Length: 98
Image 1 (cartoon, rainbow, N blue to C red):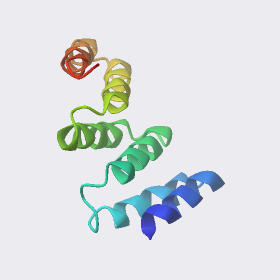
Image 2 (image 1 turned 60 degrees about the horizontal axis):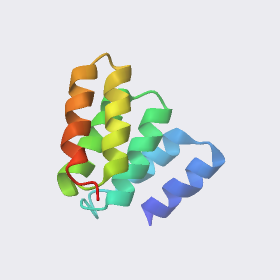
Image 3 (image 1 turned 60 degrees about the vertical axis):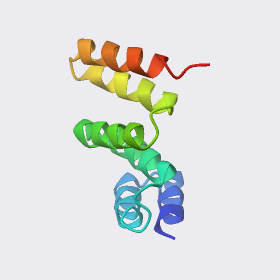
């Protein structure tokens, strides 16, 4: 599966190939949190912060309790100079903490 190839490419340090593999996998499994998560991580590592932001937002749409995605999104928004949005997102995610 393309998602497994993505993991292999990340292990090899080939972010572009990993990104391509995840983008090929997602149409086959658009609700795959793992594929969205791994794609977001690869995009962020490769410097595509807006692409990573979109993936984190998709993850949180699919599962608003995915706290690590909320934290990563908040950190990314802070890096993009949007600390108010980051704080709002963390406050919203906080409602799902146990």
